[in-house]
Image 1 (cartoon, rainbow, N blue to C red):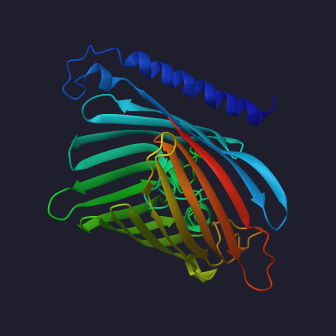
Image 2 (image 1 turned 180 degrees about the vertical axis):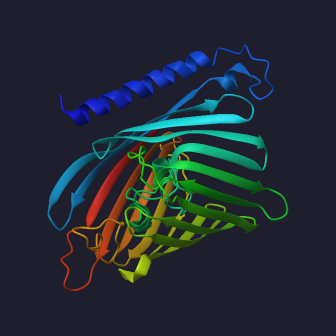
Image 3 (image 1 turned 30 degrees about the vertical axis):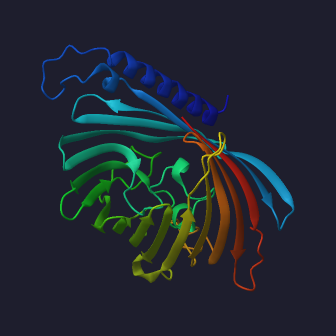
Length: 348
């Protein structure tokens, strides 16, 4: 057995043990503390959830095919008291790799404030924060996959909310900056992130985001603004990211996305809604913060893409996504990425 497979099996085993122990712990209500005041048995019991995304892709340029399990996520979440909740999530197949994703606890002593500590997604970029089953398209945007790659870390996040007059949520967090698989190293500087989501009028939200990271020796600052709007069955969203590298070792990276879709109700026993949609996204040359032989090179070259497709919602637990992706590169770059995608999403 290889070391990697042993570690993977150990993660799965610990996740199962953790899930089972929570179910047992949920039955133990012998406490007099107001902080851990037991909830109703149904609300107190851990909830097991999951998402499986299986897809077929056809590469038009290479005339080749592949099947892929993009995600096989399982999570356990629930409440320990009226003010404490938790979540532990694992992905058994992130393109064939096993990953431990979330492992956090959260305390919310009042309605407008909460503190989350543990392994979690860094609060930056609306598209990046989406779970796989609520993505608008089969493949993630350049902002989410390339520009914001690796923004899951270990740290603490505070949240302030207001639901009256001018609804908003403000989040601020500090994180190790070493990612989710390197937690033993001592650090002298934390990474940090700020996010504000404001709803000035009904159905319109504006997000402002800032993130500062230092993966190795290079400090990188992200600035992000997003806008979303929905009216009845129509939804529109746009987002822009500006990424600045310390000492101008590389030109800043700019990324943009905009998409729109419309849900059409269908009165059939099988299909509930049909949702045509289209997306445009682009990015300039990007570096993820890693040096090669002491030099910072371009990891992802400049590109743009148009994605067109339609989603079929069979039930709230089952969805099919049909997408066509057309890529655009500079004239001297060969395009090898045009593809068609058929994806099934199972949520439970």
